Length: 247
Length: 247
DNA sequence: ATCGGGCTTTGATCACCATCAAGATTGCGT
DNA sequence: ACGCAATCTTGATGGTGATCAAAGCCCGAT
Image 1 (spheres, each protein chain N blue to C red):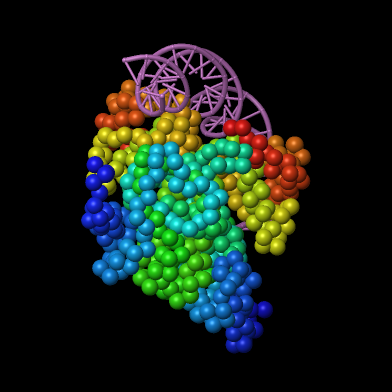
Image 2: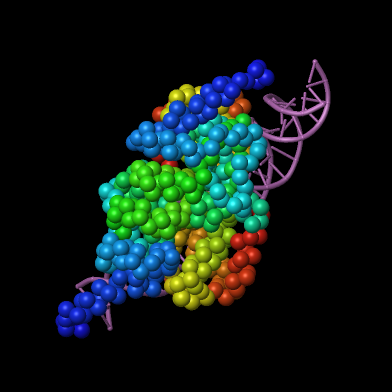
């Protein structure tokens, strides 16, 4: 099928990949952009770059040149301590921006690895920076996105500092569910892209604890687990778990 | 002494409080600002605002109008979960910026409370935002500061997710020490501004564990503890503790 | 100077989760 | 379709830090 690609097919593909036509626009970019402003943004953002499952989009230490927006797929970001322990700092799905940690030190401080075959849009930072000086809403947008990341990290700190294993897992499932819903996927049943170990690293737990807790939730009728397929059976029950922690 | 204040004293005081004369300039602001640019910044930033020990600079939920730079003193920021548990998200000393979490939601998401009599400079955000469009290094500076906060939060996540109590406390002491040093204070002996409970909240530990661990470090000859006065006796030993965690 | 409340220390016990271990299942590559 | 490696589940045990408790200390208020 690929052999029959004609020039107009390529053009069509490029068109589809322009931000102005992208269904994720409202996730990556401010929605107040005029047509002309959108065009300027379009010109900066590279065509989608495919990343195979297991591949790194970037690694800690590499020089910083661009932020990346997930177009399709799923990523984890993680930092590694001097003595080699990995901490997953986030899972990132379509429309989310990665690489903001790199601005301060001019190199990435995380690894970003695709957990399924994915595609990202490249936002060259220097260019976006100067464009954001001409387009106030764009500048505001980047400040907001970075601020949101800070708020999110504070939430994780609360989770890691105060919650018990069951609460962490319940909060994690609800968070995923909500993010899938925003993207038009089912919020009641979804496929985990990450291993139990990666979940555990993110939540400050060991993989066995993750596995056990999921089994326990299943026994309690809160969820149904089939390997990486999760079905939420009692969302309210999960929410109660998160808030009832007298830890 | 205060009764003899003359107009020229007030002028002098205002002069001293201008960013251009502030010894913390290189911590709060980019150091590439021209004289003229510095003047424009000076005009935006309000005079120092005093905050008494125990008072809140702002609280979660209050509308966002400004970022704050610590001029003198010491602050904690903390988030509170729905069911009332507090998580300290950071301790902030002179030259550090607070309030960046508020940009995304347009209200503060943390409480910021002074842990000693303090003074802050107010950076009205909208004004700084538009000024940063005219002064590229200023815009870059804000992106950098926010990025640094993200990197810092990732470090805390690593600490909370992977480290044992002793490693957390050692890392915490070394971090404080290093930040005091940057500011020209002794890195070998310093006064803790926060309670054991606040340390514990930040590090995901209970106050008893903090107390016990400090005592243990003292028994091992790593530090000397006299209530809130800490003396570091074996910095290398502490560093080894942080890195040797096979957790 | 004295009192009182908040903060800190230290001890004893317990719960939660990590660790170790073995087996089951999945899914990928050939 | 097969086989192997990676992932997941479940069980048994132990350690770390939480919890409960009580006493001592420091500091600020009167």
